[in-house]
Length: 436
Image 1 (tube, rainbow, N blue to C red):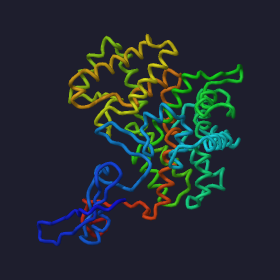
Image 2 (cartoon, one colour; image 1 turned 45 degrees about the vertical axis):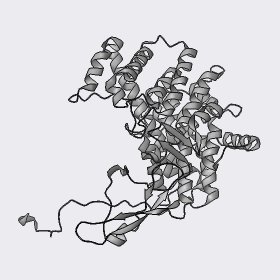
Image 3 (cartoon, one colour; image 1 turned 135 degrees about the vertical axis):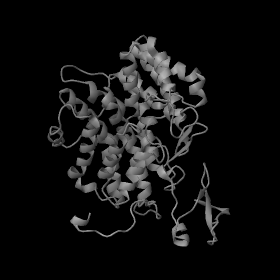
Image 4 (cartoon, one colour; image 1 turned 90 degrees about the horizontal axis):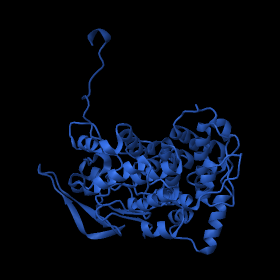
């Protein structure tokens, strides 16, 4: 952090002495007021539900400018990474701080590829779940269980352990997600194949069967790779903050990532793409394109509980840059599969057109977000809706690990301990039963 010559002064109208607080400037974004000594000097806390105005850490990984619609990984625009790099290059960037050269790229790809298999006993652990369990319930358990299989990489304070755990998690997440899918549909598990790309290998583990050879479709593999890149990290969101908070206690990396998976499951976070597809399916069942006007009318009605899912974003007040890239990929995939005339996709494009032209949505900046398009792409590829969030977790794992490593390496980091404004009962004494 770079200290500013300017100080922030806090004064009180009751005559209590005011205090000066340091101001820090980052590379981009708003200045931050350092309130760490506020309680010691004034006996007061700040109150910020949802942490909407609070920086919980300093970070060098990801920067978002919601007003401009800009997303940078380690300073690189997401548009350039999505066009010029693959997911493992992006993983290297997030973990190491810069893009790999030729030899580093080769070594890193090989390292990840050589760790894609999981312990065979994971199959028996998986079989303890019901076949109809939600994939995120299964994945939360599987990721947490990794710490029971890999005792040699569970010390979060050991840099070597963290490095090994990082590679294991990145390499094994596609295998675990594919296993959860195969288990749910009753098909045999497909082992990883080392001569395929990261995304290609995932597609094969998802859709191949022992009955016949499987050749991944290059357009669909690239689409999946782009989904991974666009979801790899997104600053201090709910699940990332969960991983940091969990890791701050010194728990092992697998447990911290499992906590992130559990948080991501929420419909307001990682489950948003699932919610968007469910919304489209509901509209389709209730009349489709012909009835979309009635649906839009309900969305605009403050008294109805109908919500437009997949539009707008908590941070982006402009067009989500990931959505622009995912929109391109969406049309590439629909073209490759000949699905432009599919009723569901016609419905999605009609809804997109309305949201981009209707002043109600435009004035509120409710642009289609990445969840809207990624859900459509995944459905086209053949991924069932309940698996969408598990794929998001797969992609976000590298961001969680990078953020966790950064926190552990920060000399200022402490165990997370938010404070509160207590509004409960005042101190009172316990009465005997006959007096209550």
